[in-house]
Length: 298
Image 1 (cartoon, helix red, strand yellow):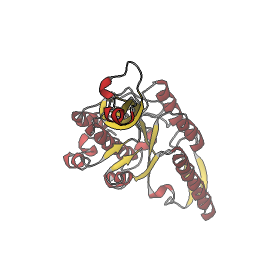
Image 2 (cartoon, rainbow, N blue to C red):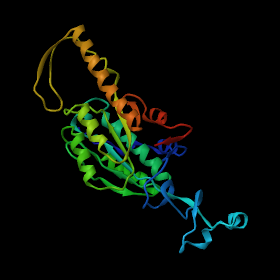
Image 3 (tube, helix red, strand yellow):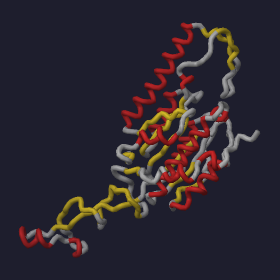
């Protein structure tokens, strides 16, 4: 049976309609974008007043505040914020391990990607799709337009398993693309053979804002196993004989808790968004936890 997902598995019209009330708002976005709904760090002749500065020869006289000149005898220029787009770069994990369970974590991850894409496209932001496994793929270069939602659903539905998990390599490839500063959303369980510290170091090097969507299951911390097992690493490691005694399970839980704490602490220190999405439950109600009064601030 093909692991490809049908477009209807990812979304339907009701799913898309439920996204219309949600928005992603940036505190500031990088300049040189196109007009949209976000605030740029570049002050110019925008539409929202921010500050004054002294007049300099060559400034546009239309930006002089003549009321201040009449009252104080000073020539000052009004500065306004430029409204621009916040590029959204979506990085869903499509490694082999993301497709093993039923339902696969990949399905929840791709639904998350589509939901966030729909929100950004709906507010005139550009969205790029960069699925990854052993390396990064350029599935869709950043583009805008509300009508692209269904196209992106088709692209995501066509994805298939693509090898081992290698987030550090994928982020290295992303950095090499030289993309304009935006919001990078990494969607994964973050179970990588390189370990969580290597992943954190790779994320720390990114100059973009970060949103981390961690795909989880209840059995991640509480495996429903006991007794003697021969365990095969789904990332290609050697089989391991293990006796799952209560003490072994306790040590495993401690290791898992440290893993989660490391990811959480990194997100806190970086000011990144972090949400855990249960792959066995509906995605959208969980994703909505990111939004405060309908708005995700990054």
